[in-house]
Image (cartoon, rainbow, N blue to C red; front, side, top):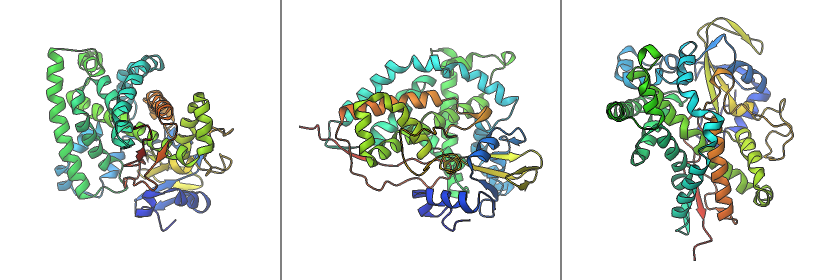
Length: 404
């Protein structure tokens, strides 16, 4: 196992460690994580759809190092996370996914394109008034935050609160090992989010609107509706899924294109290549680096015996760079013939918002490239959060040569 694993250097650039895992430790037990670490593409893809592995016990495993007293202290964030769709197994997972799936069909998402075009245009209008701007705060965060707020029915003035609540949850759910300070912060933000959402639920029950949240609130219990606790968890999950993936995807795409000007020039001449760009960025530098499961029974993965109850981390970021699956995997190539990735997961937990993330990213990148043909990043070495599951630049300063 690489000595750099989970070091500060790892969080800034995990790929040398992933390469080492693929060559020397494709599957191993990590005492630091108290979990199995699995890297090869074939095993990651198979593991994410393996019915002998469950998602429902993940939060218990993630919080296993806390005492009963500490778990009681962090009870609100634990309850919120326990109701996330990604931490459910059938039949509960089937029930929850069915309730929200109609709002995320390809046809429904495609109908959002004109609105997303307008949102991006307005965001860039504001950003391009200055000689330089932060792509993250001005575009890659705001776009998906605005879209998910409008889809759900959250007032846009609460978008930054949504980010705080989501970041708080991420500090618990996406960390390598949750610290007491992270758990305390996550619990405080979960309390704040819950109090706000319960008030909003009451308002929307009295005056329903044309949004996903009003539709979910309209289901009665005998129609397989949700309790308020379930709904709070599901909505916070949608906050996280609604913009964390897209925020990172846009930022990572701009970094990759800026580092490969010859490929950027081809995209500038042919915007249809943006679909290739997005898929290659998802493979090359995914904003989601891992998914986890718990063994429901004893089984074998890559020759290792996995005991019932063992925690397993499937490294999406490593799988997407596996030379057994991809030719020259560490090369960014939008014309790659061996396309593919597991960045949106696999099996029943495949990301329900994948079409929306792709659409938002394509529109944002096209407008950005059109309006800034001489795209220049002033941030050469971006910082990343020290999160095991999420990879996104925290700040990306862009030079605007259009200011007169």
